[in-house]
Length: 151
Image (cartoon, rainbow, N blue to C red; front, top):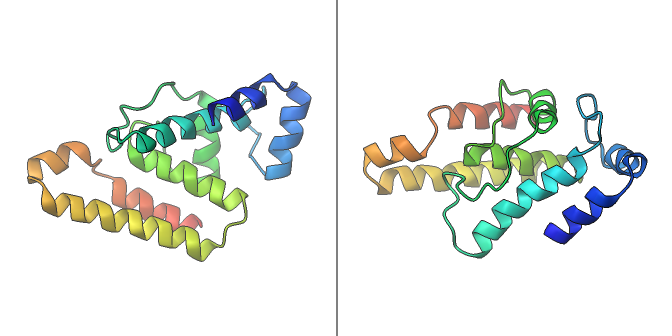
C-alpha cells in the first residue's frame, strides 16, 4: 500500500483530481488534490499494524498527522462533528467511506460496523472497566450510530 500511495503522490495534480473525481472523493476542501494518496497512507498504517500484530485500538500505529482536508472531507461526507484520527473509530469511518466510494452494498458496510461494535463490546466486558474507559473513546457508539444513519 505504501508503494501505491507513493505512486499516487507522484502523479500530477490534474491526474490526482481526475482520479479523485472518478472515485467520488469530496474535493471541496482539497485544493491540492492530496486526499487520494493521503487516505491510502492512513490506511497503510492501519493495515501494517494489523498485519504485524501491533496494537491498533489506541492508534499508536499512526505515522502521519492528518491534514485539514483529510478531516474536513470525512466530516462533510459522513455527517460527523469531528474527525482527528486519534481513535480507531475514525479509521473505521474512513474504511466505510471508501467502501461507499467503491460501491460496496450498504447492507455489507452496516454489517461491518455492527461487527466492529460487537467486538468492541466483547472487549469491554473482558477487561477491567477502568481499562476499557481509557481505551474506548466515550463517544464511539454515538459516532457509529451517526455513521450507520449516513450510510
